[in-house]
Image (cartoon, rainbow, N blue to C red; front, side):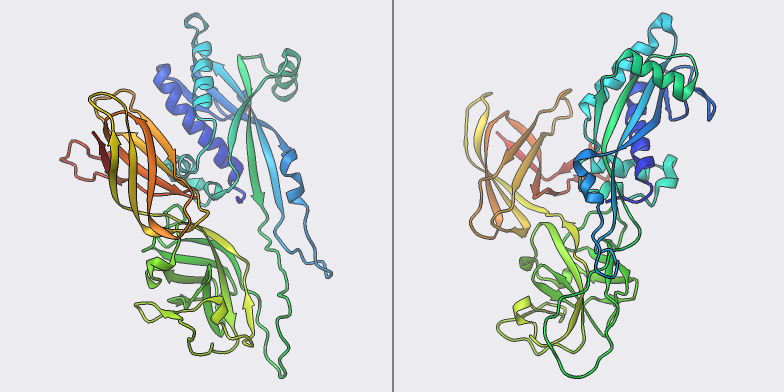
Amino acid sequence: MSNHLAVATATATLQRILQRAVQRDVDGARVTTVRPDGSSGSIPETGVNLYLYHIKRNPALTNQDTPNFQRRGDMTRRRQAAIDLFYVVSFYGNDGDLEPQRLLGSVVQTLEDQLVLSADTIRATIADPTFTYLADSDLAEQVEQIRSEFISVSTDELSKIWSVFFQTPYALSLVYKVTVIIIESDIAGRSALPVRDRILGSTVFPKQPIITQVVAVGGKNQPIFSNSILSIRGQHLSGVLTQIRIGELEITPQVVNSGELRLPLSLIETDQLRAGVQSLQVIHLQAPPAPPRNGSRSSRRGTTATTNRNTPARVPQVESNVAPFVLRPTIETVTVLDLDGFDDEPRSGTLSISLNLAIAPGQRIVVMMNECSPNSNNPIGYLFTAPPITRATATVSIPIREVKPGEYLVRVQIDGAESILSVDDNPDSPTFEQYIQPKVAIN
């Protein structure tokens, strides 16, 4: 879900994508985001203007905006607005040189090639120094996919848009829709915990902790790995005895404040973590837990990690909302097995990939291979899905088929959590600022 900067971030991302394309295809072209009548800024002599002229509720997700209330009128979850954005894209330039038409072709080709505004593309826009006012945007964390779509409109509809909205002479133009943007309310929902037990006596019942964000300490755009430090942000996070629940583990955080908790994931043994989307809760215990029993494990830092079934049955506790975060795997080794094929024939075989984190049964595993050839103008890429696994493992075997011989960069996705490629940071290297590892040779 996204904050109030979501719409502006979507517009800036489109502008940035189109700017890179049109300046390559037409010399001196630039992309603006002003009113087509020029009242809010200068229309480029040669270029493209991207203007948001209309917004509609997304019909497929309209019901998500219906709030749930408790008897006293408190909302049990935050309100959301799912919206679609409609843009008029107009083109300007020398008609004798067909510049508007060349720009139109460039825009259509670019948006067809890049139908989805990926999280990485949005993060790059937020980090761009041109858009410093978008620094607090969290659109890249939205779960729902954001797509651009060409809308075919009639001449009458296009004429009405120009005559009613802009009252300026018509310019060659198209209409695009961006769907879907979900803007979430700042007012957090509340839900009372169910009665777990009746205990005689009196106690002060604290406020329920509320998690608003789970990020790496390095920043919200930083990926989270098994050695990252988590920053859990929200309200009323500190209690008499504060613990963090990740899956079935309960761990004591290293730093406890009302607005932020910090937890080094290195406190948890890697064989207890799973790659992919993780669920996290803040737990406030009202009494110290009983000593560990039934095989509870301790981390190497001395922090006790206990599963739900070992939590004392009669200890009162207050639970926060559940917040997700994505734990990315790291590839440790890649090995080629049982390779078939001769000379220039395509190869088939098996990739054996060892990860630093275990994979659980039911998780979807995808391997991506990209040809690593500096002399190739059109490097080849492959994508293969692993067969289902029946037990937790950190090593997975993935069949590959019809692969051209050569060297390939390898990535793996576990339920959408993607491993990271290493970048060469040696300025004297011929591959400086290029991806270099992990790599596998298919010979």
